[in-house]
Length: 289
Image (cartoon, rainbow, N blue to C red):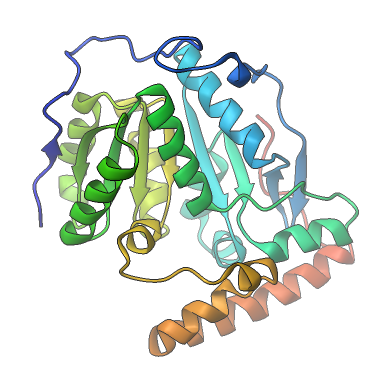
């Protein structure tokens, strides 16, 4: 288990983290009105925000620019199913400022209900958008999660591909609940603009909700296994499989013993939930903000 690591160019404590468009490479193209609540689509009792990737990035820039905070929740088919039987996971996801649909089946269901989501916003794609944004605006990012060797490789690739981005700190994802406060304190002291949490559900959602007010990072995004993909430990499904909602099948092909039962169960349950939803038998789970 690796110890928290800091980049040597950390900002002095108390430095203002806000970014003003027009400074540090920022442009006026990123100045939306982010105060308006986005439209929501309710699927199987879970409320999702109907946003495009571009609109999400605009809200991220707005949160950083204005000194606010933006917690991002990501929901795919498996997580939607698990949210219905894990109250703590559901509470953690629903506490996010925006909740996005990461899964073609969720977009298809929204269209069948005639309340269409504009597009799928994949968590891994958003992660790379955040890297690009951090490079453009010279932002500070904290990397949390994955194995130590995977994290080292991610940091190496990030420094190569996004040279103006600052890795304010990093820590592997193998720590106990008793160590959480130390991890949260390291994040707080690193003063990042963006926190990426590459841990499995529900650990990452619960960690972010429990400690968000303590480390007060402007943008928090749980990226699951995305560090493994970036580091080349696992592979992402080809684009055609992504379009047809078959990423789960690609994961089964890579790890059949571990994944086949998980996806068989969650996909079957989701199919039943989707049918009930189309028949008008679902209720809203997420309260409005």
